[in-house]
Image 1: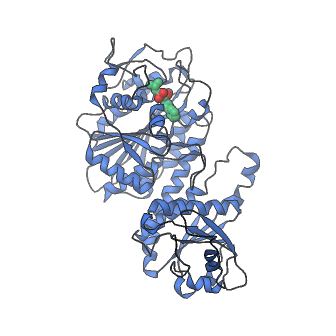
Image 2: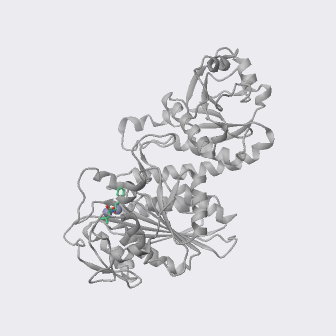
Image 3: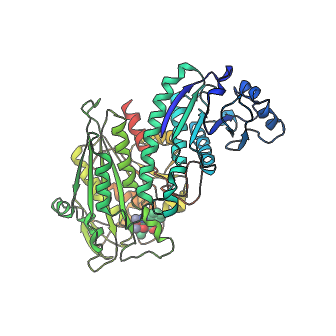
Length: 511
Ligand code: BES
Ligand code: ZN
Ligand code: ZN
């Protein structure tokens, strides 16, 4: 999509220059057209906006919209969408992103292609212009996303749904540069989030571990990212028996995908390692899942996909930080050679694990991924995984659970997640529960066999494989990676959460 920032003197006319299919303007609750800076526009429209407000048909309530049709030539665009921003005191970048998502939805519904929008909250609010522009671009591009690859008819019409122009109106000329910077960041983040959504929405027969590795290759080449794919032989040579145990029942070979972004201009020797669970389909294995909702387990690779998208974004933004992405890809199937409850396997760091449920497979691949990260002497490790049903029971789909052994790292991730609009809630690495995975025959059990504190137990398990004295965070995205309902800028299905959080985290590290 072509994105441009246009400096029109909104207060002093200039509306006749806007020739888009749809013009989006926004007002806070209780604002008049004039107070919101649309006095001259309203005058050109013969007072139409004020009339609508006066009639009580538009009050500026958050994300409420009203579509107006212009008449005559005073305004070049035929349609104006009023979008409410709610109470001024409650406004945030998150709301700007959602307002843009609502406008994108209107563009889709009307089958239009060219959009002009004010930058919600810029100019008349404390939000920096770059942040506001980034949020509006993100909300627009994310909001226009549809997964229709496998639909014959809609696919042929796809061009009519895709917008091809977004013009952002800068309230004053001095903000144009700042907005351009923010818009570019937003475009990279949202475009890559949509690529991640594609990977996650694709069914398991289309995205196998090998396909994921090929996609990682295609998406990150010629960007200063070195990619290595370890096949099962290579993993065996490294002693990754825990990881390998997961794919033993599957006809698809496991793949350990290593992405290294070491920019020559790195500001420090710090190395951040991002680890992602990428089970391309999780049947549960021998501990097989019930069929109800099992199809959704095509999204069990969301953590790994987010890591790939994050690395691509980080490289495209030329962030001066060394970052490694480790994607643990495997398919969890029952089969004649499949791992069984009671079986014992050894991870790369020598610790042995007794399987209780073969459905607790994510932690088994991550265990070796975390062990592997030690070779980088990482400054911090962040893993993300659709790890437990327990986190869905606890936090549902708005929040991800985060477990962290370092308060400073947590604070940084929380700030990043807030900037991205992908909220996190911290849960405890409660040491006393560690004994619940004591095993009679091995160094530990993979899971307890009960449902109690499942997400915490899983995090305590992972902690056993984190290199010593290393700040580490584990983000359980089992709820947030997949959305059952349509929301502004988030159609049903894959969300790409927490890709944008990971990138904002690395951006904050670069500053
Ligand atoms: N992939 C699932 C977790 C999951 C559940 C993701 C719902 C998304 C939505 C994971 O591999 C799993 O099956 N976890 C088990 C672990 C248990 C057997 C200890 C769980 O949470 O039930
Ligand atoms: Zn599972
Ligand atoms: Zn799983």
